[in-house]
Amino acid sequence: MLSGPRGFSQDAPAALKSGSVMNHAVRNSRRKQQPGQSSRRTRWLLACVVVVFFLVAYGWKGRERTEKPVRGVRREMQFMEATPATTDPGGRIDWSKGLYSVDRNDLVLAVPTDSLHIELVEAGRQWHKGIRTFLAVNDSAVVDAKQKEAAVFKETWQFAADDAQLKALHPGDSRAALAPFQAHQAFGDTYKWMLYGDDDTMFFVEGVQNLVKDLDPDMPYFITDHLWWSSVKGTVGSHPNPEAPRCLPCNYTSPEPWMDELPAFNAPRGCPCTAQLLCQADERHLFESDCHIPLHGERTYSMHGGAGALMSIGLMRQLPLSFMRDCLANAGVTTGGDALLTICLWKAGYAHTDPGFSFFHPTVRMFDPGPEDSPGLLYAMTEALAGRCDPSCQLLLQHMVTSHIRSRQQASLHHSAQMMRALSNTWDLYAAKTFATVS
Ligand SMILES: *[C@@H]1O[C@H](CO)[C@@H](O)[C@H](O)[C@H]1NC(C)=O
Ligand SMILES: *[C@@H]1O[C@H](CO)[C@@H](O)[C@H](O)[C@H]1NC(C)=O
Image (cartoon, rainbow, N blue to C red; front, side, top):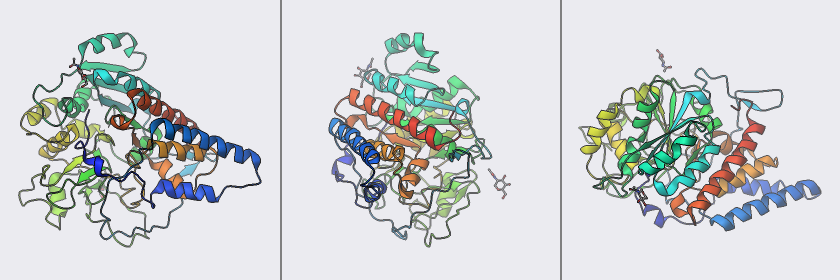
């Protein structure tokens, strides 16, 4: 598994910030409750019972890292109406109109896991149904045992040993960094986007489809809006940190005339996003003159494995497995598989691209909103199904791409698996009601 530096979340406050999107949605939904309508009230009570059950069963893990306010960003946003491109006669959103629309055949998934997490991986089959999935596991007996059912679930299982010598905090970290490249070797040039995350990461596939529909998959892209970054040199940093250097997609146009100030890092459009481009855009001298990637201890700078990422086929063509293996061998010791991957991505000349939406809507996060608040997402979806999703809640649900269940923080692996199933099933109901193109 890959993860951010272990232990960093311990200093996070347990309560959600009062200004968080989900609290906002919850407050508004309460305000909108109609006391006279008993069936609506019953549904509301039912929703509450469901949510309370999950909160009790899983513990309220909604926590956010302490994050310095972003300099230069106007935090009190007026929420824009969620504006879908088109709607079908049923009033559902039709996102099929992008230049580069994809279906599930165009997606593959790479998951690093270990022999103790199999139940969680099996729970993931609900959300990644129809998507070819590569699983790197540290036990050849598991690989053998999975062969029978692999074809049914479009799964490819491969053995990948634990690190004999630690490259980061966990023995699975090299496996985590290599999994996407082994997946590419297994699938070949037969897909457009690779979904990549921990085994306790889930993707909301319709959200993925919406995100990538305007992005050319032949352009090298490493997409996430959830990065580790130390705003202050020499500190551990936080995630997601909106000040983290990143690009915006090639030719991205910001449709937000009401944004009066840009976020702290003036993200360049990347065609593709290269390390060099970021260093040129670096007005605050965050990078040294030789444009080296800041390492943990100096500044933490990494994707977040739990929040996950999307990698285009254009990027995967540029990063052979042999290059990654060599890079890992020389990467030194760092915090996790996610950090190892970021270091090697940079060494190959590439850097992260923010999909742009949350860059201009700092209260929204596409990759693991919350963060790590799966009960909050479940609640928001339940509210939406009951017809009580205000614009900020719609903005959240219509644009979220991943959720990190964070199995390490759950009562047991079984609880994590059940949470993933609950999220998947509720999402399927929500997506069927909301999106016209459900594949
Ligand atoms: C695989 O990883 C798990 C979790 O770290 C560990 O308990 C198990 O012993 C490992 N299996 C092998 C064969 O290394
Ligand atoms: C970006 O715009 C340039 C010209 O403005 C065009 O040549 C190029 O094809 C565009 N790239 C993408 C990926 O759309």
